[in-house]
Structures are given as structure tokens and as C-alpha cells.
Image (cartoon, rainbow, N blue to C red; front, side, top):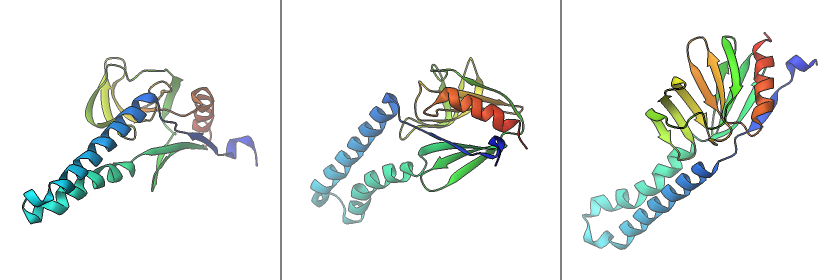
Length: 171
């Protein structure tokens, strides 16, 4: 097998922001569930399961969308999620660049702002509209395609840039 056929896996480590936001939200949700449990006798019986279960179910559901890693294969990027993977063709990749903190001063247009990652659609002055699949704001890599921009955060951004550039050139 030649080097153009090799798959490369890159971890998606959590940065401080993702750790802080995720832990904070989980603590808040567990606190809400406990509060519901201890005050359940004061609320209408049909509400009790929702008040106790929803704050636990919501973070569990959000964890399904977490980014677990990125795999580069010839001609494609595979984003590993908790229970599925997403394939992104690299055929129309125009450029790939490591630029830490490129998401600063971004606003969410339809996105998760830090619980298990920064995942979804964002916009800022430097990139315009873009999609993020990011777990660490200090390891951001910009993939510019003909029709859109994607930001990811592999554990080894420099190596990812080289691998993605090479994979985009292979059929």
C-alpha cells in the first residue's frame, strides 16, 4: 500500500472552554434534576418525570453529537461522532490552514456554543459564514472549499494540515 492510501486518525481533545462549559452545564442539569426530585411532592404528578428526567436526558442527548476525532483518507475527511461518522469529500478543497483562535468574535447562527464542543454554523468577520466541528479553540484548522468553509480542531493541527492537503490531491 502506498502512502496515498493510508488513513490517518487525529484526536479531538477538549480545550479549556469545552471542559468548563460542559461540566458547568452538567452540574446545572444535575442540580435541576435533584431539585425536582426533592420538590416532587409539591408539583403536579404528571410533571414529576419530566422535571426529574429532562435535565438528565438533555446532556446525554447532546453527548451524541460530540466530536471524537477526525480521520483523513484519500479524498475525504471523516468526522467521528459518538455514535456515527460524517464523511466530508475533499475534492473541492481550495486551502487548509492552521490558525489558532480563528473562532474569536464569532457568533452562532445555528450552533451549540460549547457543550461537548462548538458544533454548528457560526460567522465572524475573518471567515464569514462557516461550519464548526471544534473541541479546542486553540487548535483550529480552516478548510476552505469552493462553496463553504469548515473549521475543525485536531489534536495535531500541523500534521492534519499536511494530511488533509495530501488527501485532497488523491482520487
